[in-house]
Length: 204
Image (cartoon, rainbow, N blue to C red; front, side, top):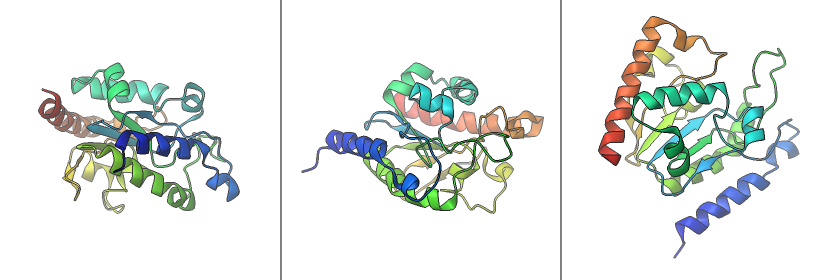
């Protein structure tokens, strides 16, 4: 019988050693950046780590992390507790470099996403979270129709076949202006309240 903790640590090692995108001639900067435990009941999924995440070795380390944990803090969730007991990952695991325009980081290509997808599927299967929080459009479209606008999904929740509840949030980066309008902030408030309800149900 497989041991979940052993399987989890093996997966982490495989992700850190992975060079599939480099072998396919994509410029990325390994290693994979994730954080948390296999016993987590909540999981966040971002787009891809930035350079400060690679340097610090943890997801959502810089300004986007500050805003994310401001949102989660309003749901009653402490950052240190979440990072040490829950699980944080991303659609692709390595830093994809800067965008050619020079504005922000490069969005991982569809092929890169497909190369990395088996890792994400294994993470979700091993952790088996009860709440998944996809952050930003790339992660949201793993679960919601990509034709839907953000204002049609932020503030909503959906239960997937595994039983997990998916509650999306917009990208928390300072480069994103979506979360800066009054109407969209109201949608974020609704998402935070949904997260808070599940958090209280799971952890009292």
